[in-house]
Length: 112
Length: 111
Image (tube, rainbow over all chains, first blue to last red; front, top):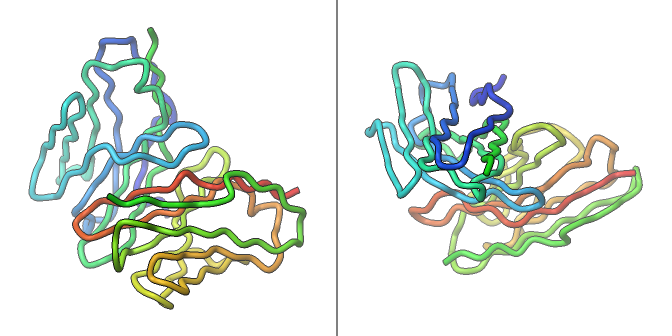
């Protein structure tokens, strides 16, 4: 049972435009969400997180939006740069637990 | 800041051979430690996690095992590898008040 889903396996965006990566979850106990970026043959790198008490968190070009009623979160990258080309994973965790559950990833390609 | 040492970077092993992957962490005490696997075309699958020395929680029943002999050491093992064990194995650490951080991973190919 996939509790965290990233339904778009890939996304292509022009340089300078906005990239929007989506993530859905099924477990209503999740209250902490994270986004990671992964290059080939490297470990994922933490990008940004959000707790369920917020609906938006911004860090530079990266903004995460959380819609608890829809059990949906999204990562916006503005403006997109060629160096942003990577696989992006969303992850979720419930308070009081230690398990981080990851989605299947979305491959972003930013075209120059 | 936390540093994760994971080795080797790549490994080719025959079916039926044993496996031992080691992960050590610097810069934090009493961390939560994790082993994840990324199989080809799939997401990050949680295999094991540990919240203390000798404490191991297994998420996926398979022929892999994990051990935590020291506070900042986490070992992934197998007595006999299967073809399906091929993948990219990642050690991760969570220190106090910090998100999960990953090592650089080990690419395991079972032939």
